[in-house]
Image 1 (cartoon, rainbow, N blue to C red):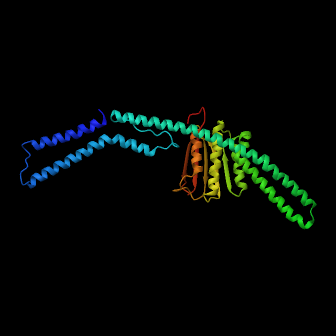
Image 2: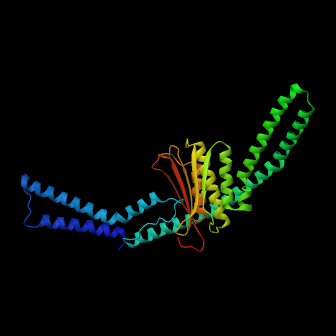
Image 3: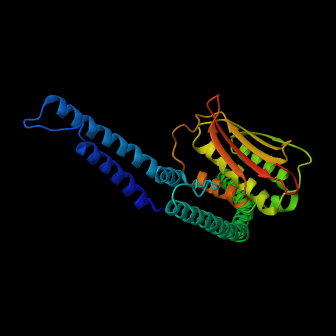
Length: 317
């Protein structure tokens, strides 16, 4: 029976019962209406209203469950599905919603993969341009300043040496930016070395990063290693810019459950009631792309903890 006919039959039954009671010899209404008769009619109306509320709540319960599921659905946290139950119309509606949600999640993963690939390609292009064009130009300027400083009179050598040192620092910063855009060490030496190099870059900028990386980590896919590196990079950048922290612990370990955990914890002010920006959404999309679990929470000490759990192919989590 459809939802419409179920509600109609239930309400019609209530009205028929009320009419039979009014037509029975036990219920009479005189003119003027007596107090007892008014009380009987009022009680009957209240009983009908209460019964109608119960009937509607029971009939519309599947809609309420579906509404709650719709409100909780998040494409960056896939897997949530509405419970099927109730009349055939509701079963069909829930099945349609679940199918639509699954299709949107699949499309989100596909689009995220395309966006991530385009971003990496653009970063590699920018890194090559910075290294080959701007880097070489700064190197030429540095050599020219050195020659000028050697040939200049003593009263100008100090200024030229200062300009030479500024150019050298700019060239070093340019190389660090190029490494962050395109982590060549990740391709050449692996994830552990890339994370240590990343920590060294932040330490060189005056921000303390202590790394704890297990030896003998299991083999991961290239996509998983890149996602771990980018999440670590974004988490360290957030801690340096927004957390008001002066120390970050970076940990990469192989768990007993057969997964690789990346944990980045700072001693800053935490993330209570802070809205998620583009950086955190980017981390969630990276995690979604490789089927990993990302959690961001405030530690008991008040800092922020970012945890990324990546399943290892061939191991049970």
